[in-house]
Length: 126
Image (cartoon, rainbow, N blue to C red; front, side):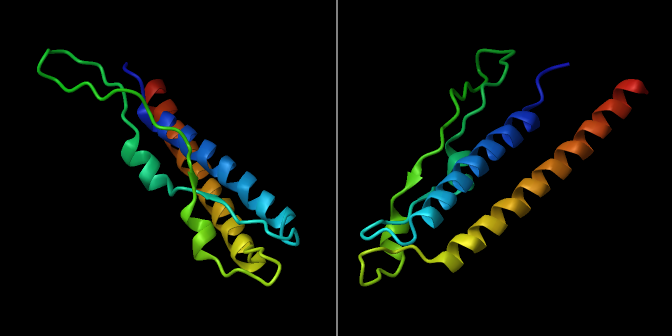
């Protein structure tokens, strides 16, 4: 049996979610810091578009897709938020919404992985 890339994609998504949650927590922690600019990561769809899985090639004519991408910060977030009189642009409401989105996405990933794992175990057991 060949490698299952679903596990790799889910792992990368969880890594991305962890990085995003860390930045959201950093934004919330610095909500009252004068001059602090909110940060976020680029959407996972962009990271996935740049991710190139290394597939097994059985013939020379097949494509070789290279190495996966990494999590990158999104600098456009700072420009899109409203700047307060202190020079800070962290909106706590936006950060809490992001945090709940991250929690839902992580729960979805976990559910999909559990279902796929059960399906895989049932197919192996016969």
